[in-house]
Amino acid sequence: MLDAHRGTNDIKVITGVRRCGKSSLMRNLVERMTRELGEGNVFYRRMDTFGVPLNPTAEWLQGELLAALERADSARPVAVLLDEIQDIPDWEKVVRRLHALERADVYLTGSNAHVLSSDLATLLGGRYVELHVMPLSFTEFEAFWNEAGMPATGVEDLFAEYVRYGGMPAQFDLPERDEERMGSLLDGIHDTIVLNDVAMHAGIGDMDLLAKLVRFVFSTSGSLFSTRSVVNALASAGRRTTSDTVDNYLRALEASYVLSGCAQAGLAGKQVLRPLRKFYPVDTGLRNLMTRFSPENYGAQLECVAYNELVRRGYDVAVGALRAGEVDFVASCRVGKLYVQVSETIADERTFERELRPLEALPDSFPKLVLTLDHYRTGTTETGVQVVNLIDWLRED
Image 1 (cartoon, rainbow, N blue to C red):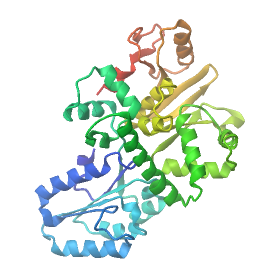
Image 2: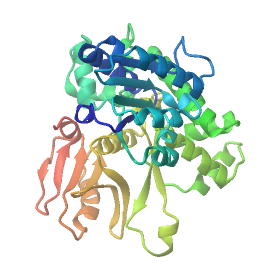
Image 3: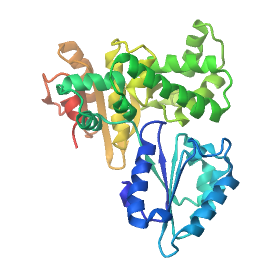
Image 4: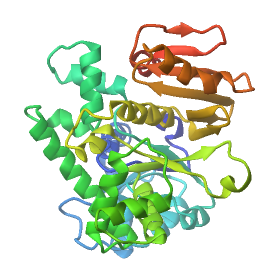
């Protein structure tokens, strides 16, 4: 997708949670463009590294860019790659001026949704394209595992490792792989996200409340709840707060791309104004860090994997609230919908019937899918519901 936009006048904005691989993508681009354009026509800065001022300003960035443009070969385009651009106040004004230069091919990365704020859209007149990056999918995880020379293992054991520790690419840089090292890595990623991309950007000072909220929402991912129920849960844990504060903190977490809210769809009447929500961390490793990698609630972990894969495949995802029961996911795209149930096992007849019932009650003909770890009962039911092994589904092209 990135190659399709190379060389165009659109600003390429690469977004995603911190440490998901955006900087590696940028470095690969730098290497390719240096070969194509020459070193003097490629300007790359990562704003959170040594050598960049501790408090970089828009004036500093503009000065760096002007000097680079003067040195560049004027007969060739200039590639400008700015990594973690959100760390510079008023960076949008510099990028707008840069965008006016027809020879500039501009790429930005950001770990906060404010990079794509309405102000940016106004300043650029809509001339940008967002390319969203997520932690590794299972197929990518499998490829990284093999390329890193990790011990050969069966696909089901590999999937269990993926669910337990997630898909952050940095795990493959560890000299050894065990729970202590994985926990330390994920703890560092978690702290960086919460401190830099949540607390700092949202101006949150009550770190204790934020930490308790993160622990609650992550460890209960897949559960439907209202803001009021979160307030009550925090009060039970000894922290009093308000619904407005919780909503503000949740918005900040979503803006950092570490958490996604999934609201109910299919409601009627007054319920439309008060939909319940599920929240899913962008990575099961970060989720499980909050529970000390407990194997409990494995079904919720699988649901998180399926949700993130649907988002990765370009779907807008909601929770189906229907008369016949809840559908885990209603996944919509421009060409239609996909209804999805996720169940660790459907070996029990009552469980199988419970998963099928809401899907069979749907009045439309869009695809209906049950994802399970079982290989038993896979195929298409008499009523047209597809039963697919979750791992097989994740490995589909």
